[in-house]
Length: 143
Image (tube, rainbow, N blue to C red; front, top):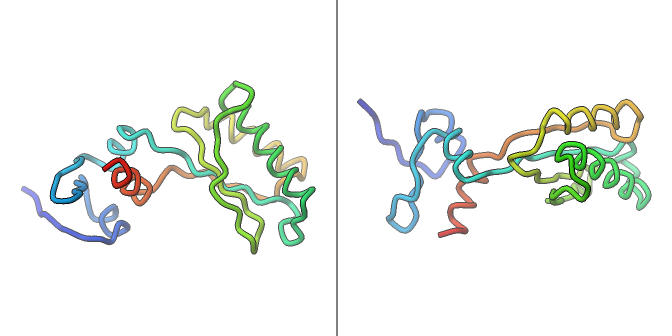
């Protein structure tokens, strides 16, 4: 038994569905659980890092935040020059949002970020997995 619901509201779709299907131009592009689709399409982690002095974020603080995250990225991937990308910088808070590869060692990333927080280099951080919106946009781009 099942119920088919169509919606453009991605939050609604992920909240009420056991399985999701994404269509593009009348063609079924994928179907499965949200976890299965995220794994299949190799989505990323989102990492938000807020420098300690975000309200007065200057060039030196910005460089320090990048250095802290670069060190954490290297630790998480166990390779110098780890492939992470800066998505955006919030001009109001100085929070820096990064994308991190799906095969990253999240435990090592957390350890490095916790150490940076303990040293006062960053005020806070958050790590989350890609959203349904990220999945939808990736499938649409690959169209």
